[in-house]
Image (tube, rainbow, N blue to C red; front, top):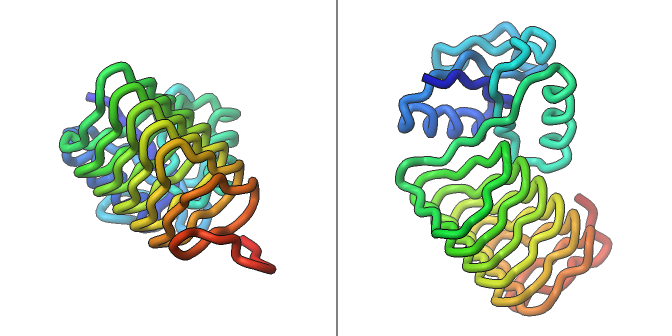
Length: 204
């Protein structure tokens, strides 16, 4: 039996708990500054400094910037990043999976993909062959990332979005829900629509 701390007691945290239940893994507690002292689905929510050194954790927070801060804090407290992969997910051969990965139900990560640390691939999403997800990438529900795509650090691909074959999405960019990316996306930008175009005067 492996015991996990789940950092984040919101919706993404509860979904991570669902994966633990499906895997038969035990959750020690949620970790969340805001909700500390409460119970979420019968699990205590504690402060980061109340965790046990050496234990495994995952950061179940969708926002990549918040995920960076929390993972670094828990690393400093000598916890170790684990991974949660739902048993219904399909992971192709010759894939490389980084620490801290969360893969939800009915997800497919195809052959030869390379996934960085603390990435999230949410339910019903697909990641194509030979695609690279750098660190802290979030692929939200129902998104389709085709083959030979590169998603740089901190990219978020919105629900139902499509990133076509061979495209690169630059670091920190946000692909809006339902967008279709037909060309490379500049770092730090927000793109929406089909075909996806940069949202003017946008801010994350």
